[in-house]
Image (cartoon, rainbow, N blue to C red; front, side):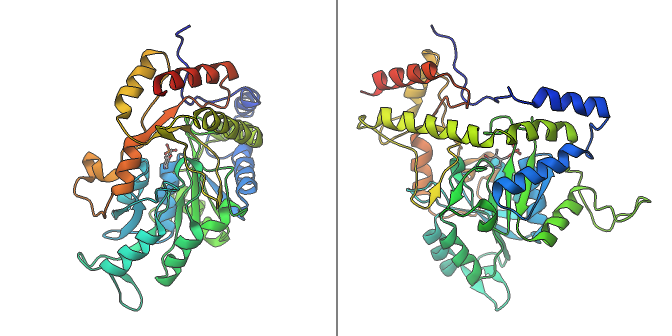
Length: 380
Ligand SMILES: *Cc1c(COP(=O)(O)O)cnc(C)c1O
């Protein structure tokens, strides 16, 4: 009875094996091949983008997107503190510094009002550039994160960005399948990045994609991702990267993308089942579903409004439910100790209250019912 239910594992029961064999049979195992092109077409279609570039991971995709938009040494990039550490690391890999702001309580995404207020209080506009008053550094971009696959309030963020001519890079790592006010993801930012890591809704084993509607910008991303080769004879015209996805990864990614609708539906059903089951518990809230978003519902669970999630997570684990806390905020991470950051009330409260429950797309209904029974017994 106490067998472990996994928290979020890949669902690879489609054409993955066939497509992988095709790579081996045809010899296309590396970073050139028909699956890479097909993968990019499928990502562009799923996100409403004019163009998409396949990358070796979500993190390398973010690094490329930031670089293509001109983020460089000594710059500052605004991010929410409540994110996976890769968002901050990608900024650091550019030689820039993340500036961590708080999230909204109702979306768990970067707060547009905090963004606006912080910029107006702590920055100067010199007519061309936005400078951080304390350090004199340039603010080079804003990077909202679509927490749990839920887009941030992008109209409000875009309004602030346009005031100061700041580009927006969306960390949409887990958001494929989501929309914002019925608009597709590609319309919401200059460049957006998804991850195909093993714990995401769709996986390529590992991998990522950068997408958007500005074709020339995406061509620059592609160029940077493949060592900025400019000719046949080992000619390179920029300091590029080796960040391209391989045909093997893309083969798995294509098989997964064929099942996008099915997987998103499964994730949303899992979310609804937990939300309905826990609605009667006075000590918990559901994960946010702001009006503006149709979330991809990457992960599901509950938010504990008071008390300690540690004990609850411990008790659940003892009963075979591998419950987890979620992203430890960036400003509390060792490598970002002392980072530029604002008031973090919502971030810290959210981090302390989130419990993630098993929500793989292939979780059997009886397993989810068992999770629900155990959680309700514990919290009633
Ligand atoms: C998963 C994730 C990433 C990193 O993607 P990788 O493919 O693992 O490099 C970045 N940001 C967020 C918000 C993520 O959830």
